[in-house]
Length: 87
Image 1 (cartoon, rainbow, N blue to C red):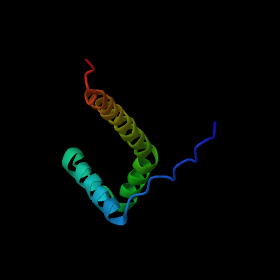
Image 2: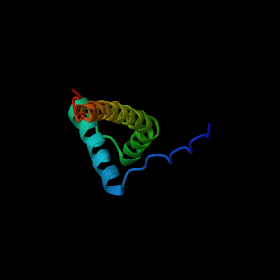
Image 3: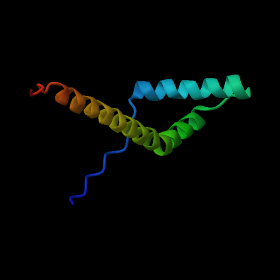
Image 4: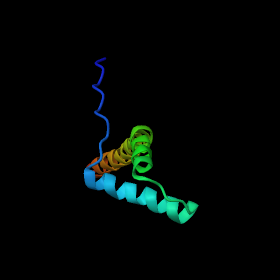
């Protein structure tokens, strides 16, 4: 069996990164009552990007596969529903 090529690392756009860094900053301020610097924001974002993104991506693939399986079951059922009854 042929081995599939690995996917490139998931990368966020600059605007997505800025939004997430702002969310990290707001979380620390609102929940922890602490200010967090830009370096710490970037470090946390890079950690999330490296460690969490692949887990979330794989979960999304599993969910898509499950959904596709359900769709294919419906297609097969619909296909056989088109059969004409032979008398």
